[in-house]
Image (cartoon, rainbow, N blue to C red):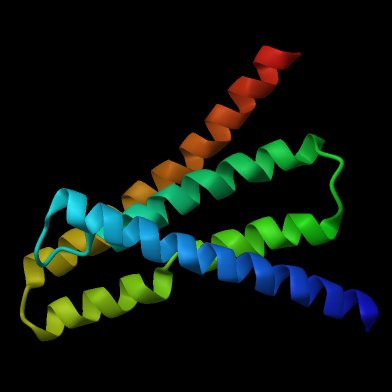
Length: 133
């Protein structure tokens, strides 16, 4: 029971950090790009989060960190940072508002870019591994 509570605490701390980072990054990206209806801030954090989790999943293989910190980084920080539920809500709202093209662009863009981001994170981490061997 004690280990579960410790893990939960680390995940909760990571989740709080990730959520605050998501709020800042999504808002910043939305303002920077200036898209009025397209939820590019949400798409941005999902892509960045996918790159990060792809990268960390490879790089953490060689790290001598405990399972609590691994969970805090992946489930906590990146779970709080990525926003698939926000993506879903944004898409449904676009559909309800009859912005069908924007909804389709959000779906295709988010899925394709996030898969590509995860792949990119893997590739960067593997390249760094190869360079340090």
